[in-house]
Length: 91
Image (cartoon, rainbow, N blue to C red; front, top):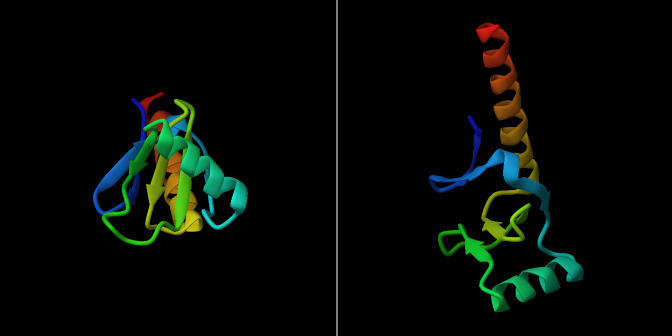
């Protein structure tokens, strides 16, 4: 089963679909988000707050989150560790 990662405010993404989690302040990332908005491929999960991280998905969608990239990365790592432990118990 695919693991879900909490990206804040009760919003979750499929961990297996995440390509990268980046800071939104760099000019290339801002252009990428703007291009995705124009093609309607942005999912805004900020709940009206400032965007602190941009998740690029393998489906070419962009997810905006109000959480720091390192916080999402820690949750992703914790989720992966928990899944590995569960797989070990099933064997």
